[in-house]
Amino acid sequence: MPHLILLHGALGHSDLFNPYLEKLSPYFSLHTPLFSGHGNSELPENGISIQRYTQELTDYCKKNNLTDVRILGHSMGGYIALCYAMTNPENVNSIITLGTKFDWTEEQALKESKLLNPDIILDKVPQYAQLLEAQHGSKWKELLSSIADLMIGLGKNPPLENNLATINIPIQIMVGDKDNMVTVEESLHVYRNLPDAKLAVLPDTKHPMDKVRPQLLLNLIKDFWNLS
Image (cartoon, rainbow, N blue to C red; front, side, top):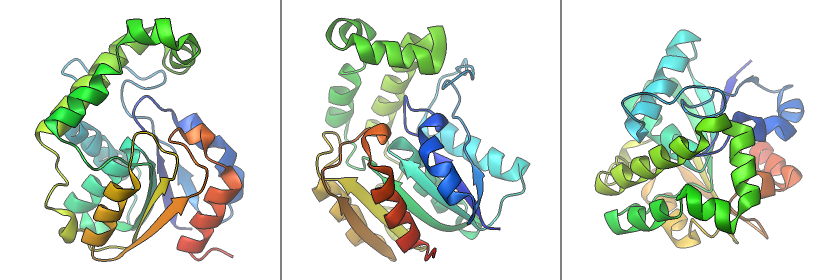
């Protein structure tokens, strides 16, 4: 059976893929790794970065002898999937990204990182603070700070910039039309700069993985990977 790796986004969790596992398991051997600092995994002492998470995916594939993998990445998970394909082209069959932000500049990263202030989240959206604590435990505030640092690092040095044309595998870029973090325009730009890409705009769809309608996403997954 082909291997499908499901990669969660920043501050996300592999549990967000649970609604899809039963429907995808007849077609794939499924993998739902957790990036360090998420869930019950420890935050690395020397911080996190896109490069570190790309290396974690590399190590996961080596440890589990995974080759010719398919990857579905939500948000940051999609960015890491493409970084992995850029450095390990022989190991990736194809990729779907969903709600992945590609337009990273220092200004953009600072703006996004300021939204990750735990005190503001506690004050303005306490239910989100509760969710973060439920998913990531007592270290959720430290994780917010680490993700803010990751974003700033991404703004200073976006590894995919000017390298998209080197990723020569089938890729489907997907974005929700109501995504408040990722624009259809930046997704279109990336789609046009990839050698073998498709673009799908999901109607009435916001950024969070748990706001995506499972049947809509499953239909697009089945279409891209020719699953009957």
